[in-house]
Image (cartoon, rainbow, N blue to C red; front, top):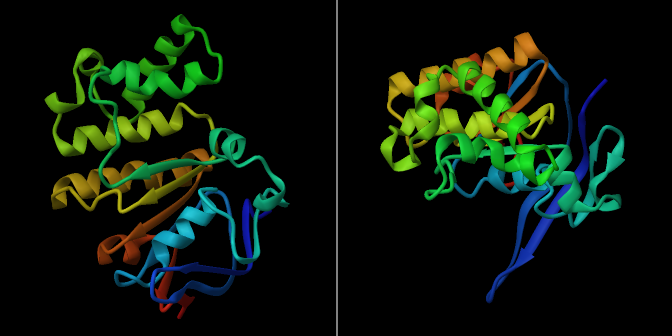
Length: 220
């Protein structure tokens, strides 16, 4: 069963000078246990499409269905908290929180007790290949690759089965990009996550289970 389904999704916005059709009638489905890549040049609409899937907005026309329910029928803040987790190119870690506190943050928002959240955070650190000694460091003390691993661990702490990644390797060198992709691929193939990656990285597109290419708001 598809976790996500896009039904003739369109999205338009108005600038000071013109009406822009960012997404133009996309229909497709996304299944658990797979890595999907969405590729395209800047301005092709891929990041807008990911934002619609993440519940940051709703389509101008058409529907984004998650587990059979359209996002325009959901409370979007609750949807973002319970159904999807987003990983960003710039990591978006809280600079004044330690690694452990960053990972614990979404759990505590859900009401998980501090002791249990801390135990889960330690397990998630190990899951993304970071040592327990990293727990008391601050983000600025970590490399870019390590910060992205913390961001993935934090996303896993939300306990959704959908991870949406916006250029997750865009700020990383080749070696760290490979490690991040392998973590995401393992989560899909071994743990049944649905992984959707917006990327310019051709190597990710080549190794994803499914690769969609966008141009002018449409899949090619």
